[in-house]
Image 1 (cartoon, each protein chain N blue to C red):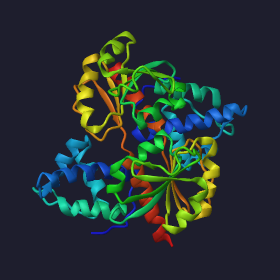
Image 2 (image 1 turned 90 degrees about the vertical axis):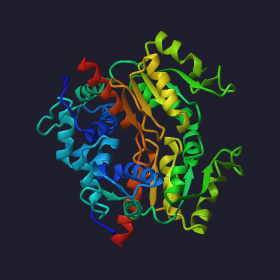
Image 3 (image 1 turned 135 degrees about the horizontal axis):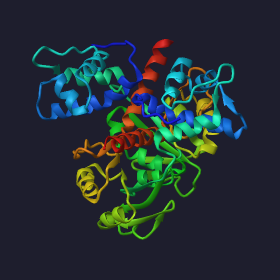
Length: 213
Length: 213
């Protein structure tokens, strides 16, 4: 059921919602879930659901829908969430601490082996189950634990310097929560989160609703 | 230069990045910015940039590009970020506190008039410039300050109950950071953030990079 077909970004972004929904169906003891039900729950068009789930290689059966167990497995495989990814987090402020407490990530294969901060009051402590180390230990721990992925939640003014440090240590994937567009060597992948995007969407929805009336 | 044309979600989500970039160009004293430069900076196709910016009603000039001042104004207008939106935040935990400290939102018209929490130790304090009140005061403050928008950062187990409270008080737009799909009456708009989406994209990028080699 593996597939290396390329999927569009919006499709990939929707996969966690599908997974969540299909896991709920599994918890309720269902063997199949219909594309129509998925579409209604996620407020998508049924054709979009079929297109999205096609990337997993799982095909729905007429009248029954998608086989639940197989679909869960296939989404995990597609996202490589069927294996452990050691990760670190740099910048244990409020956002960093919130992310360390996000249990969903651990369930999806993300194994946070350490958090790093400048603040001596935090170092040596345990934040939501993850030990906090000084920045100077990044290199050691990345090598020791074969870490490839880092979550970057430092202040923007430190973002590029810390990213350079991470790349030097061997990090090849950075989840960037700062508003800095990082300069990275080829071969290092990055995903930039921009919270303003969600605010923009909500703003347009508010505007459309008010002109509706 | 106003436009009420409908724009696709991915286009709306990219507008804050355009705005950020064009504001930087303005700060550097530039009068025009070319679509090609924008495309390169944001790693998009030039045709995508033209399509996206068309929703603002601003058209680029041949050889010169987009007029910077006009484009900034038009994006603000399109997103309704040219006026103030009073907002509240419910759930002043780590994520809530991080969002209260996100200065970008204030620059984009979001005026956070209060945060609400159950924790008595937080009530009466000031979190990143926003006063913290008990949940029981939501109704009063929403009415007093004509608040329409609420950021929801409570634990998932409280999400629906708090959303009901918000709607009752007159909130018509909810930015939902919980993993609960809220049941809301028609006329209330919602934008759900799912941090797992970004992790999914990064996971696929990591997978593609490793199969490249």
